[in-house]
Length: 302
Image (tube, rainbow, N blue to C red; front, side, top):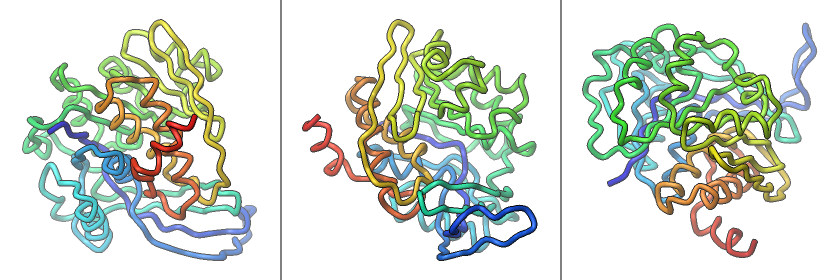
């Protein structure tokens, strides 16, 4: 079995549909509300939809939000790599979703923000071919030191993908340097890539690819840039009318890993991921990846 191990935990997403982000001191006009699971769950759901086994290595807590997350993982056939945190519930993220599908976040961590070296000891890497980590987890003081040391010790045979996340500017520089040194792949959106390199998207992709297998820079509806040490490819977006863009980047990452593991073709994997991410935004919710049967006809028609 070749499995993706996600080291960033899930969160409970509290999703408010709003007419617009409210001005300071005012109240949003809310047209809908829902509670679902997001965070580290999203990329794993995408990998599963693309046919890859998936394991949650991030912390899952005990309590109402923790149960919500644990049940969502179980429903997708995603195993827990270690026992649930016994004394903390899961954290939650308030998502403000605008009519054009754009989203804004306010989050506070729970169990997913707590990882110790002892808690990581039960993880069995025997079936793991990929590990991924989001910068969100490196932002948590209660998780980053132990997790960075654990990543440092990963066998070289296991490929490691790092997703910087919107928290990139807040991450401790020394820990970030260690994570970047170990990363076989980096997948970032344009703003994150620029924050990492100080360069615009295409040059950032090329810079991030140096010394590793490659880098992806996601550029929203326009698609993505795939860079290796010797080449840069522009993968155009698949046109859709967006409903909810929450989780689209995670869908891209999980789909890319699954297809690269299956085909060993990075260009095909980037094309697959771009179509999958586009299809995910035409549905409500952060974890709405399309099945392989939905993606492949579009790929073959291109």
